[in-house]
Length: 455
Image 1 (cartoon, rainbow, N blue to C red):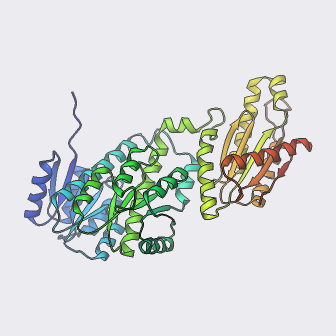
Image 2 (image 1 turned 120 degrees about the vertical axis):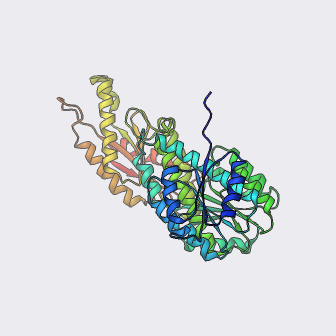
Image 3 (image 1 turned 45 degrees about the horizontal axis):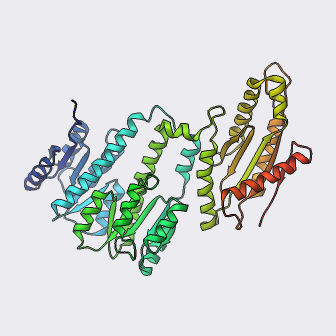
């Protein structure tokens, strides 16, 4: 029976005693070890050995740890290898420089054996996931909509912390860094938040009233919806046992109180960067996921995916007043097309209308086949007047289209339009309002756009 290969670790340090310590400790855990005694050799060994993790000393001859990190992260062959910088330099500036150069974690000398093993174990799990994703990434290209959203998305951070002074400091720092920040003062409030929205990163205090941080972390990692959200714990300096336990439970990083602003920004940035890269790979290759969100006939997203997007858009509107509009469109007299020309011709019309939607909407918008001959478009970060211009352009494009080769088959659409309102309690409220507008368009003679605005 084939066994999984041993995880590989490269140790790069110019002190023989440190190298021997790492080799003894990691070999005992079943890892395959290679070593390098200077920065240039570390780059060579990384390319030839292709380790799962690199333990890299900062102060080395020829190339220092920061330079080695930058070289490896710039090379596609080694960019995905997690790097733990090992340093006797304890300043925040040194850590920030390392994280900015692309390092994934830090160990400060003198370090604890169990903490070192926990960090290596955590990053090997990350590397294994990344390898699995990359192995399949060529099979299924990422949808353009998802790619554009990930590229332009303003990341959300949830801070779970009961100390108001710390939350205010963190919110101010992260807000200035371009992040959208929400606060949950305890575990129960965090649970409520996560039922309505999914952040891109969680800052989690371990000492919370009610549900403590470790119990909440356990729930997060056991739930398929939240398990991939990166978590940075906020901890007291001397609480090593809890830190080590949290790494084995799946925590991604930690910050020591009092939180330094530069280190906070650097660690949040580094972990969100890794998270978005994983999400991009995951979306692009998960064929089951793609099938579950895509309408097979038109290639548009389906109703199931619409529900997910609507929940997120409404949460962003409620919390951050990010407006969005929604258009629902129905093909006029579609039943007669099916009855007179047959279902294959009807399918041709549906696919042609879907293509018009893809061509006319922006990459930030979402087009959905809602069912039958009905389509929905979500215009993200868009008010109703802007959405009206695009909707009229879609209506005109359908009206001018010759749908079936060899036949003078024309078609038209009736469109209802609305935008999010403070009174909306669910996505269905918005869809119903747009649907009412669409039926007004039909009653008024079809082939037109009607808007219903609710303040």
